[in-house]
Image 1 (cartoon, rainbow, N blue to C red):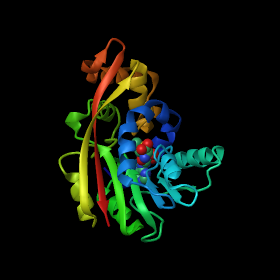
Image 2 (spheres, rainbow, N blue to C red; image 1 turned 180 degrees about the vertical axis):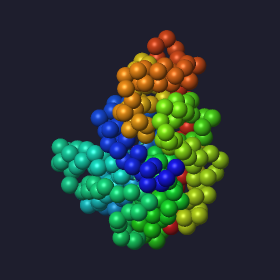
Image 3 (tube, protein in one colour; image 1 turned 60 degrees about the vertical axis):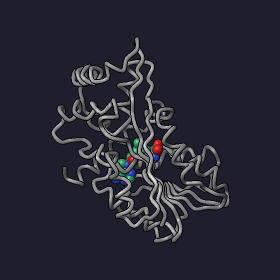
Length: 271
Ligand SMILES: C[S@@+](CC[C@H](N)C(=O)[O-])C[C@H]1O[C@@H](n2cnc3c(N)ncnc32)[C@H](O)[C@@H]1O
């Protein structure tokens, strides 16, 4: 897939996902995000770069941890995500969070400025994850650290059927390499290749719970990386895509609710 197209699909897709993201993903992603924050071990007064920040599910807890003497710079390719963070920071009267639209692969930040760089569940969407991890490395001070989380391997993520269901209804793949980084030791070796040392990695099994088929479909279609394609589907295509996706998660249904297995891979490295 043309990398520029991939970035556009992500940028405008996540713009569409903003109103749905927290409703469908906040609880489901919490285990990965809290582990990312534990491994980041933020201290009062530190400067944090949060890459692919989304609605700020990691940004705002990070801001609490570093306190008003610290700083969190939140960046994302989606302008609407950045607007959401601005609004939320202003509603909560938080002044030490800055949000800026940036591509993870070319960050407009000076070298060696941050104590910590974080990327929670964002690297899978970049055309060149190694370049994004190099940017994480460039942005932290000597002795600084970086933590990233990605989804695990395809075979351990019960909702992976969403991609073929959508790809069969559009002309290009939505997210061609989505599960690659979470397979084997690739995220760890990408960190090492980018220059990080003492790289620690862990794999966390999880279960995504949805009370209804509508919520399971909402999360998969409206709240995530396929949101742009979904937005363009007519009613008939939506109905057939929902039916096909529900078939792929049928074995995880109990009554009307779903408990879908998933897996996160989290890596911490030091500069
Ligand atoms: C699953 S959300 C994760 C949001 C947040 N970090 C969290 O843990 O909730 C993925 C985010 O990656 C962003 N994203 C996708 N491609 C990107 C890129 N190339 N550069 C920066 N952000 C990107 C999306 O806009 C979206 O907000």
